[in-house]
Each structure stands twice: as C-alpha cells, then as structure tokens.
Amino acid sequence: MSVVRTNAAAAMLGVSPNTLRSWERRFGYPRPRRTQGGHRQFDLAEIEALRQAFQETHNISSAISIARQRGAGPASPERLADAFARFDEQQADRLLEESLAVRSVERTIEEVLLVAVDRCAADHRPPGRSPELGFAWRYATGWLAANQRVAPPAHRADAVMLFDATAPLDVDALRVQALELALRRSGVRTLTLSADLDHERISRALRALRPTALVLAGRGAPLERLGQLVYAARRHAAGVEVLDYCGALPDTGASTVPKLGTSPLAARDLVLERLPR
Image 1 (cartoon, rainbow, N blue to C red):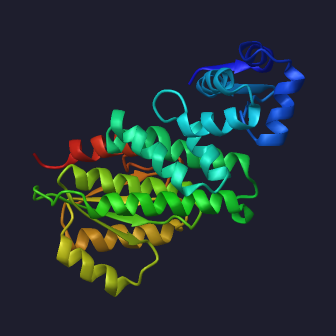
Image 2 (cartoon, rainbow, N blue to C red):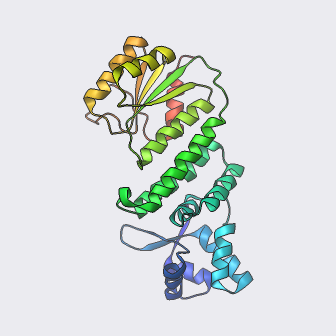
Image 3 (cartoon, one colour):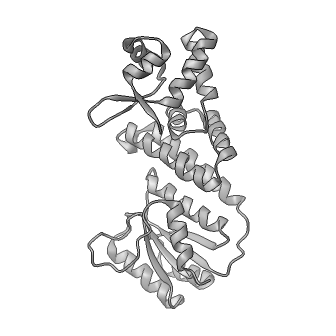
C-alpha cells in the first residue's frame, strides 16, 4: 500500500494541512492510519480518488461521497475497513465484488477481508466492546460461510479435520474459516469442529471422516485438551498428520508438530504438501 504524510496529501488536494485535518474530523474521510510515532499516513488511492472527485464537484461533502463510492483501483483493505467503521454493509459488498474482479476468492480473503478486520480490531478497542469490530467480524464470517456453501464438491480422497479453539470476535476465528474454505476449494474433504466438544461426539466424527491430517487451530484450548484430541484422532486414523495453525501450541521449542503460521493460503499449501499424492 502506498501512503503519504499529511503535508503531501494536503498539497495533492490543494488545501492546507489544517483543512485536511478538519475534513478528517468532520467527515471521517480521508481516514489516516497512525505510525508508532503518532504521525498521520494517508492511503494514496483515497487521496487520489478525493482529488479527482473534488475537481469535478468543487464541494467537499459531495466529493467525499463520490470518492467513497468510486474509490481508485482495486478494492483495498483500508476502504473496506472504512465501510466497516461506518456499518455500511452495501459498500462492503461492493468492495469485495470489486476485489473479486481482479483477485481470486482466496486472495480477496487474505489481502482485503482479513486485513480490514485486523485494522478494525486495532482501531477500535477494547475489541469485546467495539460495535465496529462486532459488525466487521459478523459480516466477514457470513461472507466466508456464503462462499463455503458454493464451493465445489470434494474430488480427493484426503480429509482434513480442524479443531477450532478460537472465540467470537477473534480474528483468528476468521482465519480458521478461511483455511477451511481454501482447502474445500482445493477439492479436499474438510470438517471443522469446536475443540471443546465432548469425547464421544468427536470420536463419532473421527470415525466418519478418518482424516489424513488434523489441524489444531487457535490459542483457546489448554495443552491437556489438545493432547486428548490428538490421542483420539490417532486412535481412529492411524498415521494422521498433526499440524498447528494460528499458534495452537505454545512455542517452547520442544514441540515437533509442524506450524502452519497464520496465513490461510500458505497454510493450505503446507497442508496439501503433506497429504498423500
């Protein structure tokens, strides 16, 4: 993402830095991000969109309305985060449709949707009491679920079971959904279950799926519980590969379980590499 400081952004718009800051306070647009030193940085695409709209209308209120709807270039996580902050579901839909015109579903999730929710979580704290994050998280989980429903049927014999130890409003919960969707779109039979289900129910699912790989996802389960899940999986699916996604296991240096990181696309590729060909 290209960014510019306040003075440069004001110069592009032909106004003073004070005027630019007043627009930010009054309209919430253009919406800067802050550096660690507290300096404003503006998205260059937003500034360019506003400059063009201002030249057409010569009215800042109208120009901001046009710039928000039109944007500039492919949809960006900054524009989507702004839609979340304004509880604008229709604009969020438009931005993701724009992104899908130039990106795959997987790249749209990783490069736009998840980054926007991450930014919303960073900008609106505490997370558990932020209506903006609540809106963004629920919108994202609904969008991911809708894409999962239209994913093509599995065409591989491999199966992957994910044990989800995340919590509501946890951005990692969206990463778990994203990984499941990416695996399904790769033709792999995939099932996600909560890590706190009782032993009998999990055993029934393991017998039905007989997974090739088991992914422990999220930081919300104690080590003892994860051990029980792995033991149960190996009873019903001998030789199952156990993998760690989004930091499920403590990083002590003693674990031999491969780590998938937090990127859904990178995690999908690593899982596929470990499945029988």
